[in-house]
Image (cartoon, rainbow, N blue to C red; front, side, top):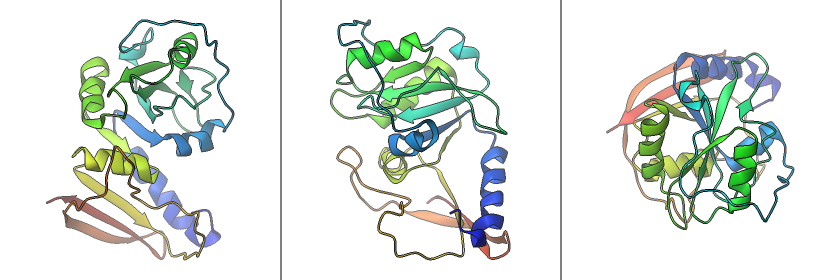
Length: 213
């Protein structure tokens, strides 16, 4: 992704991401740790919080949202506002399950982050989408990975379009992420899409769009 030969295509990817005008962007825990760091959150194990979802003060009126799939409660958010250079601030919403420790929920509350509880033991993405729409008014969600996050929404039937930028770089690195990775709560299964468009971008890159068949 960051090879010099990919620079033109990467610029197109960033511009496309901004141009979708989505209400929120969703990432998995591995990708999020790449943004905020891999440190573990310091929680008070004796803290109790009410059951159910939590909408932080002012969250319902936020201009945009960062939706984090983090049922294990691993992300050490410094605050409920996520900041990236060159991009507007966004409010953090964590997608949790009923098994996510109460101490981590309290950690999020203390930092002004919101969370949605969807699923008893494993994340129920379909229910999470319903709650995101109901509690925060999110209708258009841009899912940007990694592979398990992408597969989670695909398996739930929540993806209606795939927009992929291919860069002209090949690697034999086994650690390179794939677009879709199956998880226990997001099993692998065929999902058909129809080609909508294909365009050469960024020199030798390719932007391909498929829509739900």
